[in-house]
Amino acid sequence: MADVLFTNVRIFDGGGEVPFTGDVLVQGDKISRVVKTGYGQRSQPVLGARVIDGAGAFLMPGLVEAHTHFSWNDQPSLEAIQRMPPEEHILWCAEVAKRYLDMGWTSCVGAATAKPRLDVVIRNAINDGTIVGPRYLAASQEITVPGGLGDTTQPHLPQPEFAFGAVVSGPHEMRRCVRMFAKYGVDTLKINLSGESITGMPSEMSQFTEEEISVCVQEAKAWGKRVAAHARSTWSVKECVRQGIEVIYHASFCDEEALDMLEAHKFEHFVAPGLAWLINTCFNASEYGLTREVTQKMGYHRELEAAVESMKALRQRGVRILPGGDYGFAWTPHGTNAKDLEYFVKYVGMSPMEALLSATAWGGPMMKMGKQLGYIREGCLADILLVDGDPLADITVLQDKRRILAVMKGGEFHRAPPVRSQHATRWAA
Image (cartoon, rainbow, N blue to C red):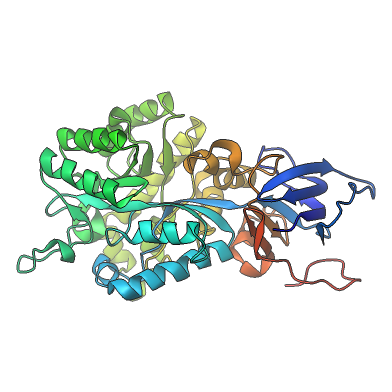
């Protein structure tokens, strides 16, 4: 692993300050030096280091995705995702993992997998170098109840192999399920506390008893695992706070009490609203039968309005809102994840700075790595992007792979910057 010196770059260091011109030295898998420069000054060269002249390009931490489904296969239904044969499915996951890294997502948090061990196998293969992908936290299948979100079995085919999720009923079955996934080696247990209108169970409906949820949380913590919840309904959001469920996906319907509860525990929870799912289901899924008339009847337009208001309120209260929009359906394909940052600015009212922080500095704790990730600072892991353009001026540049000039993970280039001509004054797409 050769040393790399980035020179003449505009550095967004993850601290929330205005970017500054400087140089960054990477040695091994960490950032060893960050130097502010100006007026033609440069930091001292390092013997043997590869020098990358950024020519004024934007250098920033790698992005962190908080709600990732590698096994979602860009299809329009849960059944189409779950019924993919396992051999093809693991190859799909490997290809998608590479796609995320290509687009600058150097860390991802698994939010559920379509088969019990897909996430674990992919995480392990990334860690041992068998495949290329981001840092990854592996999730369980979605834990659900008979007839709940994720139970895709039919009356004549009740076998668990036909279920998208892991179906349990009662505390005993819940305990057994959590222990099974802990045995498989997941990092996160995912529980579906509310419905999802497209599946027939309304988003505002909740499906577990408090006792079942409590057993899930207690057993997961006994095994040293995190719990994440699909929680759209008001009751389910409150239950996440009451039960100490750290990761809350969606949180669409927050009443004043739910907002107060989250604010009071804002350093104990992460919220990833998944706005991309709502926005694209409402407006960009007609070719799959989800016309505006259909999605209005399902309640998605009303939910989108509620989710936007909830996120605005949570932002004002200082609750951490992170990107991750249920990508991997036909109308939210993998690789378009940076749309979340645009949606945060357009719908939630975040500044581009806040949106970038949500995907960088706030991602370290989400990955359970503290401040090792998400910063361009001495001692931090060298997960680095070099970008042609300024995301603080135009947040959408991160959606264009051609504008992401280089992707570095742990001090090694996944994509090295293109060779520039000696007389070039800016990066060419």
